Length: 269
Image (cartoon, rainbow, N blue to C red; front, side):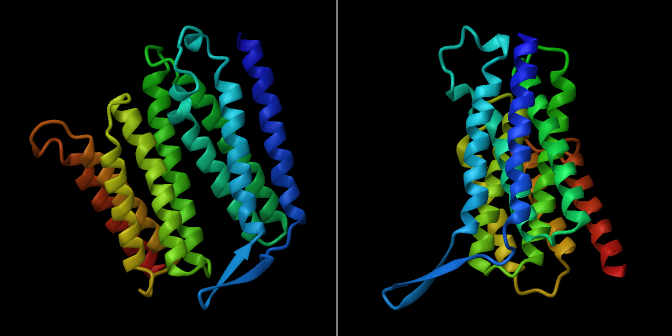
C-alpha cells in the first residue's frame, strides 16, 4: 500500500510541476475582454482562470492520492471525508500559480517554483499522514500543517497588497483564502468538531479588515502581517472551550504582541 502511495505521489507532483513550468510561457499582462453589462464594463481575464483550473486539477489529484490510505478502506463516506484534506493543497496550488503568473521571468521565478513544489509536496505528505488521527505522527503533522497554512496565507496577502487589483477583488480573494485556512486550522485543532459558522465569521472579519486597510499607506508586508495575525488570533479564540481565562488567552495575546513587534521592525526598516 505504501508503494502505491509513493507511485501516485510521484506522478501527481510531476504533473503539477509540468503545469507550473508551463506558466513560464504565459504573459504577465492578462488578456482581457470587455463586456458591457447594463452600462458597466466588466473585464474578463482568460489567464486569470488558469490558477482556478490548476486548483481543480489539484483537487482531483488529492482524492486520487489520498484514497490509498489503508485507514480509508472501510469508510463508506469517501470522498466526502477527504474534503478537509484537499483544502490546503488546493489553496497552495492557487497561491503558487497566482504568484508564478505575476512574477518576472528570471531566476527568482524558478526559485519560487522549486520552493513551491517542495511546500506542496510536504503538505500532500502531511495530509496523507494526518488521515490516521490515532497514529503517532498526528501530533507532529497537525501543527506543521497549521504553520504551512498561515505561511501560505501570509505570502498570499502580501502578494495581493503589492498587486494592482481592485479593492473588491482583493476582498473576495482574501475571504476565500481566509475561509480555507480557518476551516483547515479549526478542523485540525478540534479534530473535526468545528462549526461552519465559525469559519464564516473568521473569513468575513479578515476580508472586512483587508478592505478597510486598502487605502492606508501601508507596506505590503505590513498589510499581510495584520491580516494574517488577525486570522490566527480569531482561529485561536474560536477553538477555546468553556469560559475565557487568562491561561486560555495566552496564545492569542502572544500572537498579538509578536505581530506588533514585527510591524514596528518592518516600519523602521
